[in-house]
Figure 1: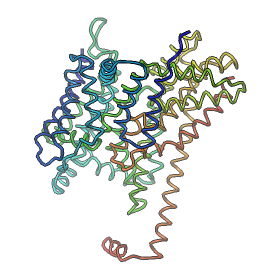
Figure 2 (figure 1 turned 45 degrees about the vertical axis):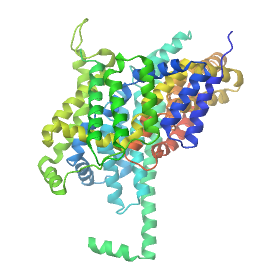
Figure 3 (figure 1 turned 120 degrees about the vertical axis):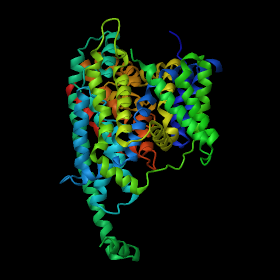
Figure 4 (figure 1 turned 135 degrees about the horizontal axis):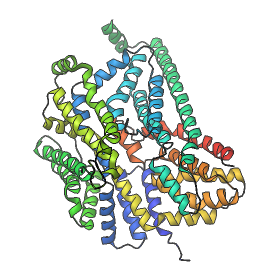
Amino acid sequence: MDVVNLWPLLGIGVVMLGFLLKFNPVLVVLVAGIITGLAALMPIREILAQLGEGFLKTRTLPVILLLPLAVIGLAERHGLKQQAQNFIKNLKGATVGRLLTVYLAARESTAALGLTSLGGHPQMVRPLLAPMAEALAEQRWPGIPERIREKVKAMAAATDNIGLFFGEDIFVAFGAIVLMHTFLRESGIETDPLHIALWGIPTALCAFAIHAYRMRQMDQMLGRLQAQATVMSEQSPTPVASTTSGDQA
Amino acid sequence: MISLSFLYILVGLILLWTAVLTLLNKEQPRRFASASFWGCYALVFLIGDYLPHEVVGLMVVLLALLAGFGALSSAVPKMLAPEQLQLSLTRIGKKIFLPALLIPFITVFSVLVLGLIGNDSWRLLDPKNLTLVSLGLACVVAFIAACWLTRESPLQGGIEAKRLLEAMGWAVLLPQLLATLGLLFNNAGVGQAVAVLTETYLAVDHKLIAVATYAIAMALFTMIMGNAFAAFPVITAGIGIPVLIMQHGANPAVMAAIGMFCGYCGTLMTPMAANFNMVPAALLELKDQHAVIKAQTPTAVMLLMCNIFLLYFLAF
């Protein structure tokens, strides 16, 4: 048996170190690529060719990201965000946690039916879901600190990911199922793709339960933090706070 | 047949328009460097297929250096004046949701209906890339609807796309660059090296420990590669088949299904999965570029523990 060259693992080390030391990720990846190529004894020309070929093959990634931008940008210019926020504020009983839980359920179940394009960050989270979550947080806690507002927006993006990941994998025609089936067959193990899809359901349900529970906790956390903040500001009323409340009254 | 090359031309034109606007905007800082980034990226989409791979590789290095050393700048966005925005809010009202919602609904319609049009020798839409081509089609229709609804010119659409691109900055490049690195890892034999290490150093006899090792290795290797698809063959060949299936007699369907989900838990926790974790943080203009990962990590860790127990109780 040939001795496997372990040096290309250096590339993984570069990536981990680069991200840990918080260098610009784009540079980290470039350097990791070049070092991996050198460690595998590729000549510079070959490394460049590999980079070029790989980059051409993966052009579909930015396509998904870039195509919706012009549509979303135009709609945002004419008040998409404001309309989304007004809509959700007028919905009775809506909280950040409930909004995101409903979205999680919708995203996960549609992805399980193979409808993975009914969501996504450029076309759904940025223009609609995140502004709605932000508006609800703002409604519950006027003057919410920037740090907490960012957490709410990040949670909206996280919810889209979790719904997509743990839904799509129980759709039998999804690429992952095909990949697992083909790989196991090549290793001499026969499986039924439908079984692989069905055995994903327990995890999909757990994912929903865990994330929905975290949303409920986020609602409670918002309430608790706000109560603390109100107590603090009542104990030491600052002139700034009193003028703002005066303006509103 | 409408195929991917049609989408590449569309994206190339958006990028080229961004480059031209940047070059013409005398108030934009570092406009020459920024414009060369967007212009070079546009060329990859427009003429990349006709260039030798080494030349494209050089362009990739140039793009990464420009993006990595902070050449990308943003113009000060020119928003609508408040009274004009108020006018739009009352005139267009809730109909402004229409273009945004058209994107997913036309995509699904196109996949389910337009995808069927054609015969054995000719299809309306490329069947190999049906979802992507459908998304492209949906974006074109939604763009026409958006221009009509807002009474803006398509050129204004380009300006808005540029505003969002600039808000994302270098994060635009990262997903594609990482995917390229993944391919390079494959060709350089990183997968084999990891497989050798796991086979040599991870001999596990106890069933629960074996299950936990497989689950955690899937998550960790996915975090390194940024992609569960890349981790699955390596870790399953290294631990899954020899230890779980051969030694302990696990049900392969259960092991594969839950093993892949362990990988997805890893995807939620790594900056290497840039399109899910880093790009949204940039799109939402969050100050902390790891904010989305931090929001996902508790769910991912709890779910990984659930998976270990599910695998232990369901696979045997």
